[in-house]
Length: 194
Length: 259
Image 1: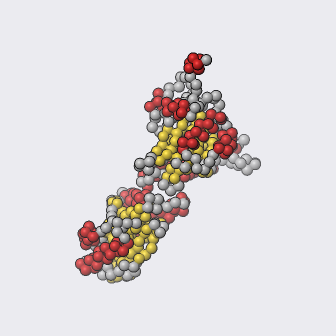
Image 2: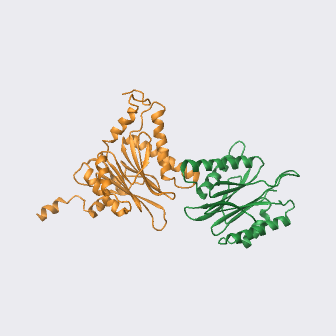
Image 3: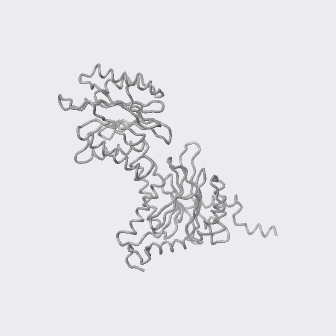
């Protein structure tokens, strides 16, 4: 089952998502990237209905890019989140809604602050210090409640993330084997090894 | 002269747009100056008279003094020159565009983007529909987190550009050269106010400045909240400002008494 986690630190946002693409009992792919880079300082992890996920995520990615190309400056995380949420809310009220859940993490260069948003397929949005989607949430949220430090360094954040992933691996029946972890800070987006 | 507004002249220009600009050159002057900590926008009113009902202005109408200067959004103030009716229509469009952006992106519309929205509309009227263009030029004074304080000018063709100091309407050429001489890159809002008032007094038709002929506004950043603060001056505030800068009309009675 798809698991995604994210947390905010002193001057960065960590976003992690599992890399398993499975249908029924078969794992078709074990290195699927479920985190899109929307702009130089914006990451989005997606999960949900197969097909809907990539379709919606790519629609968002291309439109955010278009905004950046047209207007020279990129959308700030707060504004991008508002637009993404509204897109989902409008989708919900259409003939066939997208069933996609998102974790949107970004760094606002203008105000030097990291931002994280939990968004679900109903268009619910919450600005949060940490978040997760999927069955992994049952283990992640309690651990993050206890161990998360919003002013932590990247090393500290990675250690907390390791705890979350290990617990999910230990206790979830169909725990994913591998995760992709990306970080966004004032220098941009990069992948990190856990 | 062409009955069809959207075709080229033999010289390769668009007559209707040139005529629109001609109309604007007779309209009340609008002056804008960009300072390092804000922007000053002033305008000369043409519709004046004793019988004009200014009671709404005295309270300080929310969106603007009514003839030349208007609030487009919490972070943008505009001054218009040209056909007032066309201007009102454009102001309304701009306000909708600003709110539409706020709805989609939960942020104040970036100043240049707002100027672009209006310019895209204006350009359409030069190419489709066979309708005449808007006979309005605008100055946009605004602030956004991306490029801080900015001043833009747009004309009936739908062209726009960013300025440090500029002028539209009657006597704009004179005002522009005055500004070119006196403007300094690191000017403060306080000094910009002085510069604007002095330039207006030299280029306006009337002999002395007064709140019946002048509209005045500033856009600064609130020191505590760090949010843009648009201030469109009320008539009493304009008179006080002119008094402070020594440009107010002298009281005739006191003059007589002194003599």
